[in-house]
Amino acid sequence: IFTLDHLVNVRVLRSKRFLESRAPKLTENVKTAMIMKGGNTSQTVTQALKDIYSLKKPNAVLYKKKNITRPFEDSTSLEFFSKKSDCSLFLFGSHNKKRPNNLIFGRLFDFHVLDMIELGIEKYVSLSEIKTSKCPEGTKPMLVFAGEAFDVDNDLKRLKSLLLDFFRGPTVPAVRLAGLEHILHFTALDGKIYMRSYRCLLKKSGCRTPRIELEEIGPSFDFVMRRTHLASDDLYKLAHRQPKALKPKKKKNISHDAFGTKFGRVHMQKQDLSKLQTRKMKGLRKRKGGVDSTEDEAAAAPKQVKVES
Image: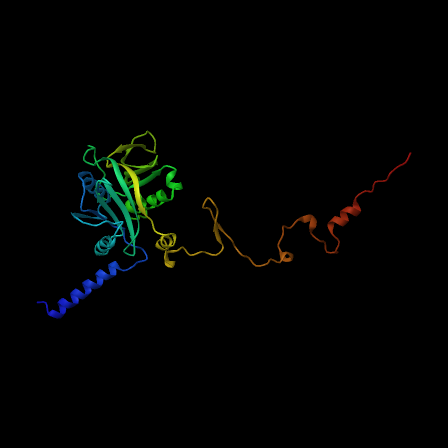
C-alpha cells in the first residue's frame, strides 16, 4: 500500500532526475536531431526526411505531423520543440513554387538558433531504390569532404562544420576495423554539393591489410545552396568555448615537437668537478717521493747531441 507522502517523494525524485539530465555537463550527451516537415511538402522531401532519419537513428526524433512555420522568418517554434525534446540539431523540410524540394539544416546553442543553411534538392535517389544490403542501425559513419571550396568559401566552411555536427554520431574511445563500415562523402563542385553514401567492404588481398571496395547504398543527393543564416563570430566563438575542467593541464618541463615526440627537461644541481672521479691510469700515479713517474722517465731518457762536421 502506497501512501500519499510516498507518491509525492517518488514524483519529486523523478523530477529531480529529469532536471539533472537536462542540466549542463562537462561532457555533454550525444547531440540529438529533430526532423520535421513544414506545412507544404512534396513526396521527395518526405522521403528524404525519412532516409536521413534512418541514417541518424537512434539519435534523432522524427515529427510526423506538419508544422506550419518558416524558420528564416520566425524560429520560436523550432526553439520550443528543441527545448521540449532536448535537441540541439534540426532538419526542416518544405516545398513551394519559389523554393521547391527544400531542406534546412541547422543547430542551436542554449536553445536558440545558432546557424542554419538552406539546401535545395536537384536530384535524389532514395534508400529503397538502391537494392543492396544496408549498414546496421546506429553505425558511426566516416565523413569525407572533397573540394577546395570547403576550405575557401566562408558559407561552405560553416556548412562543413554543420554537417560534421549533424552526422558525426557519438564519441568513442576506440574503433575496430570491422566497425569502419559506413562512409558519407560530400563533394563541393561548380556551386553544388553532392552527398553520397557508401558501404565499405573488406575483401581478401593475400596480405594482412584487406582490400577495400565501396558499394553505394543510398541515399544520394545533389544539393544547391540557397539561403543562409550564420551566427556572428563572437557568438560562434562562445558556442565553441570549452570549460576549464576539460582543457588539458600544461605539464612543466614537458614539450612536444611537430611529429608528436615527447621531450622532458631534467634540472640538476651544480656539480663540483674537482671531486669528480676519473679513470685511474698507472702513468699518472704519484710516487712516495713526490716526483711523478713521468719526470723520472724524462730524466732517464738519453739526450741527443747535435754533431757538426
